[in-house]
Amino acid sequence: MELANIERLLEKYLNAETTLNEEKELKNYFSGDNVAPHLEEYRVLFEYFSTSKNERFTKTIQLNSKKKHWKWLSVAASIILLVSVYTGYEKNQERKAEKIYKETQFALEILASNLNKGTVAVAQLKEFEKAKNKIFKQPK
Image 1: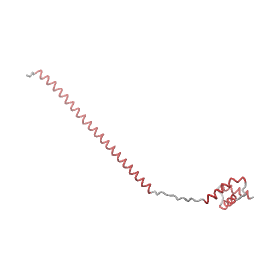
Image 2: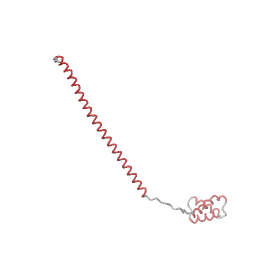
Image 3: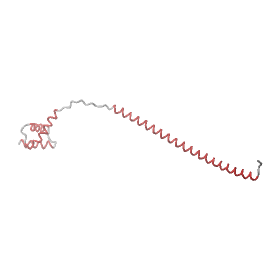
Image 4: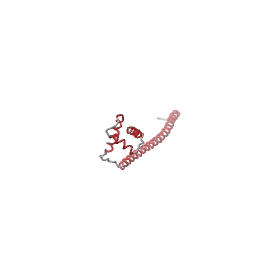
């Protein structure tokens, strides 16, 4: 009868339905010497629970404060801010330089077209001068 009761309690234990008193009864049964051979595999399980209950962690746990993380986070944020401002300034300077370059190019094109008009006019004057010299021969 006791073996049938232990098997029923073990089944309840594996289904997580036992009370504390029933678990103590199982623990006492498996810590004894007269365990049924087909239940011998559960003996190791209950022995482990008995020994692990007495284990204690004796090393000290060193906790890091969260303030250090905020320090590094603020340093990283300020570096990112500086880099972004610098690159934004550089891009703004590039845009200004491109605008100035285009305006200078436009001004030089206007100057070149006016100079070309002047060269054409001078060439026409030279033709006119040659024709005038042919008509009115001047003494040398």
